[in-house]
Length: 179
Image (tube, rainbow, N blue to C red; front, side, top):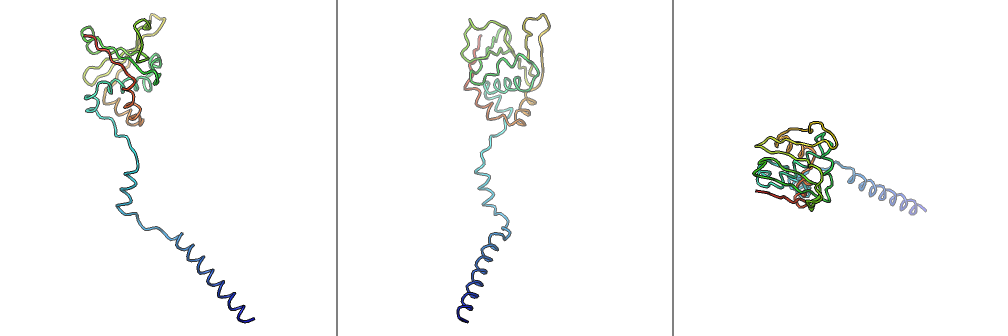
């Protein structure tokens, strides 16, 4: 009988020590992360690099993409919503001799001349200065305009985390350069 009580007590103490040890190891404060574990976390994180002016200067289609995205998302020019179809894409048309800095923007990268019934939205790019223009349909009012700079456009797109979206836009864009 005494042996039975002693075995039960010893087993209970052993069980309590085992459970207590497991609880203590799971709740002990972790040590500070090592430099190696921090770099692993950073390496796993996929980030899109910010847009830069140098990148835009090297890629006209990316520049047009930034300007179109900005016009759709950030200007208050209503007709720019007509080119808001990111699946259909865009056609950017440039008449270098007639308007060296003006770029017409049509919805649908495959739009035909027969489908171009209304005057399009357009932007002009002169150095760092960007001017947006939008005709008011069925009205004799003056066109709506907005102005900004490439630097402000880049800053806004980076702040909105739109870099990945904008970098994918050139694949849905046709550029027609008329000399």
